Length: 126
Image (cartoon, rainbow, N blue to C red; front, side, top):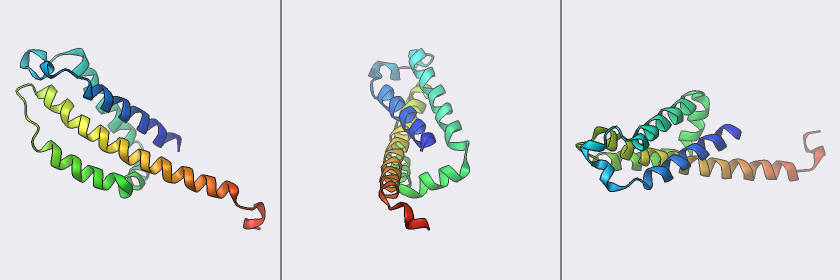
């Protein structure tokens, strides 16, 4: 649960930061902008969290995340820019939203499961 929660938090924050970037950062003279570079680092950190546990990714992906990733792949086809870092950040933004949505769903499912298990009578397993 904590791993999903951490990934959700990081991906949601990165998605919000990406959304807040001013359009002027798409210009080639902003390719080394500190905000763009930080978001690229954030993307690497999020990927490392995902790759940390292949079993976790399988569970996350097979839930709501699968449809979100399909939508993500459709959206990124049209992302082009003379500033390659801007284009990468825009693709990452779509990925961050997809991962956030998948994590939100999985957290909700786990919370419901944990709540129903905690309400079950103690003698159930006996």
